[in-house]
Length: 157
Ligand code: 4NP
Image 1 (cartoon, protein in one colour):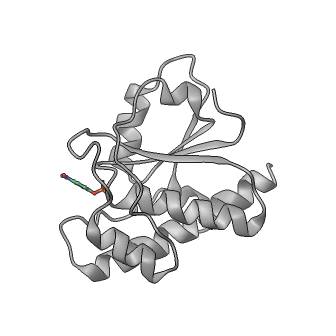
Image 2 (cartoon, helix red, strand yellow):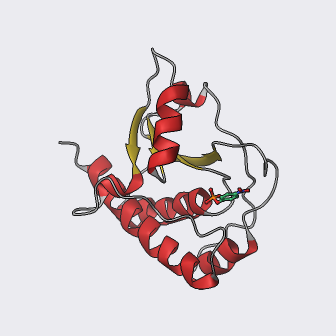
Image 3 (cartoon, protein in one colour):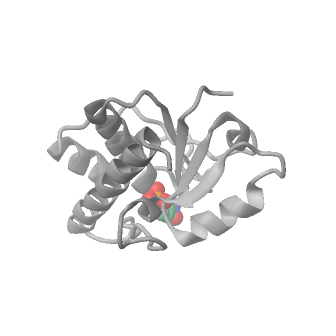
């Protein structure tokens, strides 16, 4: 079990949105002075072992963050015990995570954009089948979500 807070970002493939969320959160945690364990995973295992999508690597690099060393993995039931916060990138991921979460689990579940004022309940759009501009939108969304989540973890209600 990781020390608190331990944050796991989950999307479908773990090669586009959740690695970007992981990287944005790590950068934001450092900026705001939060110590946290950070990881990401996918609902599916199709891309397990692969680095992030080249378009995700490009957008991260354009914003000063390297993600080429990350490797995709599939979320497991043990993750709900290891992590204090499991953060879904979209509503479909959230529904699937609720089904997978063991009854006694430690992790709280939420949507990333629940942590952005005025955007609660919204999805981070899946850029996989779109264009490079889609990845800029994704970056802006995960950065806003990461900033809000770090703030919330630094000043719990
Ligand atoms: P991600 O994007 O969930 O943001 O990593 C996707 C990556 C791969 C697939 C779908 C979405 N796929 O179908 O393989």
